[in-house]
Length: 425
Ligand code: PMP
Image (cartoon, rainbow, N blue to C red; front, side):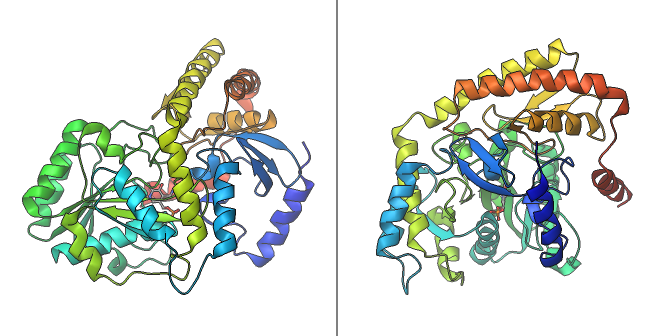
C-alpha cells in the first residue's frame, strides 16, 4: 500500500492547519497507517489520496446513508443549483422540506434548518431556556452533543462560565436522572438524551424504556423540555424520531448528518409546546437558508419513505455481526459488538488500552476495509452482501495476523496520554 501522497499532505497540512486536521476527522487518535486524506468516494467505497480503495464502514461519521454520490439525490441537488442556492431569501423548498419532516416525525409540529448538528443542539438548548425561562440543562455524562464550549469534550479554551448551568446525569439511570432533576429545583430548562448510548470508547447500550418514560414524565411535571439528539442515529433506527420506537415523544429533536445524504444541512424539530420559545430566539447563519441541501434532503427523505433502505441495512448488519462473531471466535478473540447492527461498535475483551483493537483495525485497513477502533460505525444502503463477505474475510485474516503479533503490540502513544490525563482529572 503506497502512502506517499498522504504523508506529504499531512506534512503540508501541519504548516497551514493548526497541528494538521482538527476535530473528529483528524487521524491523530487512529492507528498510524490510517490515511488522513481522501480523494474520492462512491457508493460504499472511499479512495485515499494515494488511490487505495476501502469499503467504508464509517460513512463519513454518518452523512453517507444511501451511498456516496447517490445519483437520485445529486440530480435533485443539481436541478436546484441551476435555480439558486444561497440567495437573499429562502427558496420554496424550505417550506416543502419543513412540511416533509413534520409529516415524517410524529412529535414535530415545526422545523428549523441550520448547517451542523452542533447548530441544532445549541439552538435546542437556547429555545428550551427561552420557552421555560429557566437555566439548567441536564446532559448525560459522556454523551456527545457537539463542539461548542457548552458541550465540547476537550477543555482547552473553555471557561467554567461557558458551562454554567450544564449539569450531568447517568444515561439510562432513572435514579440518577431523578437526583439531577431534584437538584435542579425549579430551574430546570431541559433534559438532553441520545437515542441510545453511543458514547465513544465504550460499549454501546440500548435505550432503557423506564428511563425514557421517566424523562418524559419529569419534563411534564417540571415544564422542562425533553430533547432527543438524533444527529447521529436519525433515520438509521426508524423513519421517525428514534424514541418513537419506544413511544416516547420529545419536545425537541435535533437532526443532522444523514438526512440530505451528505449535503450540508441539519435541523431542529419541535412540538407546539416549544413553538413560542423557538419563535422568540434570534438564530441564523449565512448558509442556513441555502436551497441545494434542502432539495437534496427532500429527495433523500422521499427515498427513505419509498424504499427498504432501513430493512436492507439491518439485514446486512445482522449478517456482518454473525460473520464477525464467528471469525473472532474461531481465532480465539472476544469481540464485543454493541449497538444496533446498522451502527455497530467493535471493542475487544481484555484490551484496556485498545492495542488489540488498533492492531486489528490496521490489519483490516490493509485488506481494504475501513473500520474505527473506538467510535461506532455506520452501514449505508449502497452496501451489499458481498461487501459484508469482504469485511468478514478481511476480519478472519486480520484476527490471524493480530494473533501472530499479539505479544509485540504496543499502545497508541497519544491515546494512552489522553487516557492518563483523563484519569488524573
Ligand atoms: N450530536 C450527536 C449525537 C453527534 O453524534 C454529533 C456529531 N458527531 C453532534 C451532535 C454534532 O454534530 P456536528 O458535528 O454536525 O456539529
